[in-house]
Image 1 (spheres, one colour):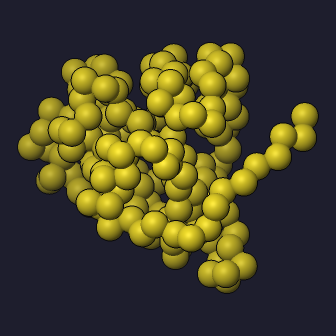
Image 2: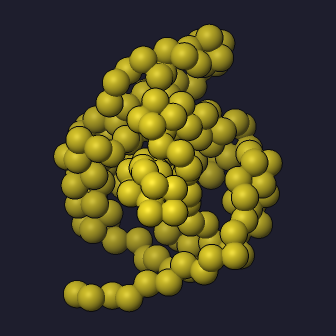
Length: 164
């Protein structure tokens, strides 16, 4: 990931103790723990440390993916990932925001907003025309968060089929 998008909001972040930076392999343990928190909330997923760590490592190996962590005094307190998709509706690249999660004790303190701000800057710089994500329909806190950050609810219904 090119580091200059982070510099664009540097002034905003410098005045806080929380730093947003690209994730590294040494962050995988903390990130896996955060996914455990996320999947304990979401009804459609189950925490599985081995699978989540493998997924994160695979994503980290992708040159196209962006993985960010929020750090406070060397502790990873949040994370967010971005993956490109080709949209026939948009006629180009869009971004799938995946796994935005902030540790429970730091929610409501602006960490998620900081992560989303940086992801949006990166997506624009990569020429993405739209961001999308999935959230649990019963998670009122998450829905309010996304509503407050100008995310639009859609009529589309996510569906899936396991093929393994």
